[in-house]
Image 1 (spheres, rainbow over the protein chains, first blue to last red):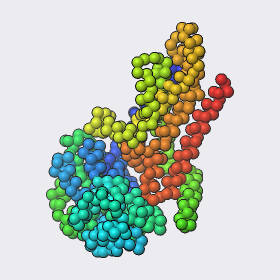
Image 2: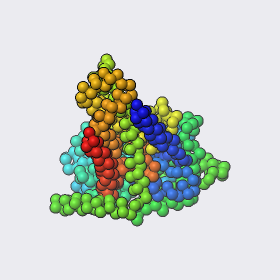
Image 3: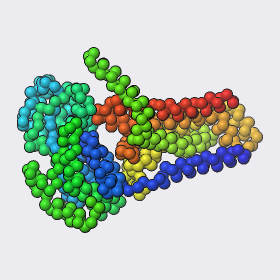
Image 4: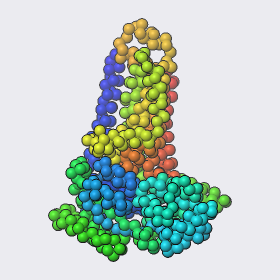
Amino acid sequence: MDHAKLALLASATIVAVLLGVAFLGPSGERVIVATTTSTADSGLMDYLKPYFEAECGTSLSWISLGSGQAVAVASRGDADVLLIHDREREEQFVSSGNGTLRVTVFYNDFIIVGPIGDPANASSRDAKVSMGSIANAGRSGAALFVSRGDNSGTHALEKRLWAALGIGELENLGWYKSAGSGMSATLRLASELGAYTLADRATFCRLKGSMGEALRLEVVCEGDPSLLNPYSVVLLNSSRYPKIRYEQAIDFLLFITSPEGQGLVGNFTVSGERVFFPIYGKTESIGLPPEDEAVAIIEALRTRGHVV
Amino acid sequence: MWCDSMGWIEIFLDGISEAFGLILSSDAEILGIAALSLKVSMIATLLGAAFGVPLGFLIASRSFYGRSLTIAVINTFMGIPPVVVGLAVYLLLSSSGPLGFLSILYTPQAMILAQTLLTFPVVCGLTVSSILALDQRLKETLQSLSAPKLWEAFILLRESRIGLITAVIAAFGAAISEVGAIMMVGGNILGYTRALTTAIMLYTNTGEFALAIALGIILLLLSFGVNLALTILQMRYRKKR
C-alpha cells in the first residue's frame, strides 16, 4: 500500500516538474519574421541575426516559407513582421487592412537555369524568349521545366511569365513538373532531372557554393528587367493583431532600413558574390515607383526614438 | 556512373568524419540542436507515458461498452502521420486558434505538445496490449483477495513492466525521429527550435550533405544511448522476475 502511494506520489511529482520545465520556461523577447526561403536559405538572416540582436537586444527568429504561406501565417497573426518578395500579395495584404506599411528594402534578380549544355537553346537576354524556347523544346520532348509549385513569390513570377507567353493549364503539360518545394529543393530536383527552372540568384549561388559540380545547372537567362526581384518588409496591423510584438517588428524594420542594416545587406556575400542590393528609399533607380510616403513614415518612427 | 558512386562514398565518408569532428570539437550550435532534440523528445515521451499508462491500464482492466472500438481508435492513432498532428497543433496554437492565448507557437513548448500527442497513443496502445497479455489468473487472484484498487493496479503494472518499457522505447523512437510536426509548430528557428531532424532537412535542402549526414549520425548515437539505457533496465527486470 505504501509502495503504491509512494510510486504514485513520485510519478505525480515527476510529471509536475516536467510540465513546469516544459511550459514555464522564460521565452525572452524576440521577434518572429515570416520570410521567404531565399533570404533564409542564402544565409542572409543568419548573417543579420547577431547585428540585429546587438543593436536592439531582441532575439531575431525567422520562419522560412514561400511568400504565399508567409502571408497566410501572418494573416493568422502568427508572425510579427513579413520580409517577402511578392509585390501583388504584399499590396493585397496592406489594402485588405491586414498590413499597414510596405516598403522595398533590397533587391536581387531571378535567373533562369538549366542543364549544362542548354539542350533547349534557351540562352537569351530576354526572359520571354528563353521561357518560350524551353516550352518549345518541352513540347518536342527535349526539355523539362520544374516549377516551385508552392505559391511562393518565385512561383508567382513564373506564372506571370508563362501567362505572358499565353501558356496556361501548366499542370497538364508533360514537360512541366510541379515540385511543391522550397528554392533549394527545387534546384536540386531540376539538377537531378536535367530540367530548367526559375531561381533567385542568392539561393542558386549558395547551392552552387555548397554542392559545386554536383549541381548540374547553369544560367541561361539573366539581366532581363522582368526578372527583377524586389524584397519588402510589411508591417502588420497591430489593432487587428493585438498579440504580435509590434514594437520589436518596428525595430526590425528600422534596423533593415538604417544605413547600417542597408550596408550589411549590401556586404553580404555568398561564395564571394554579392547577392542582395540595398534599395531603401531609392526604388526609382531600378524602375519601381517611388515610396516617399512609406519612407517618411519610417523616418518619423526613427526620430520618435526607437533603439535603432 | 563510376564518378557518381565515388561522389556518394565521399559524401558519406565526409559526413562520418565531420560527425566525429563536430562531436569532438563540441560545436556550440550543434550541441544546442542535439540537446533540444533530446530534451523535447524525452519530455514528450515521459508526458506521453504519464497520460498513456494510466489510461491504457484503465482501458485494459475495465470492461465497458465500446472497448474494442476505443482500442482500435488508439491503435490507429499509433500510426498517425506527424504532419497531421503538426497541422492540428499549429491550428490549435495559432494566434487565431482556440489556444492562441498561450502564445507558445514556434517555441520548444509547442514542439513538446505536438510530440506528446504522438507518443501518447503509442504508450497507451502498447500498455493496453501488455496488460491484456497478463495471465488472467493473476487478475482473478487479486480480485479474490479484494485488494485495494490502487494496490491491484500497482501489481498488474509491475507485472507488465517489460511491455511498458517497450512502449516507452517505441514512443521515444517515434518522437526523436519525426520531423513533420516539430517543423510545423517549431518553425526550425536557429538557436531556439531547430532540432536534429529539422536541421537535417535544412542542410539537405541547402546541399550541405556532409553536415546533414553528421547530424544524422549524432541522432542515431543519441537514440542508441537512450535505447541502451532502457534496454538494460528491461533486461534487469527480466532477471528479477
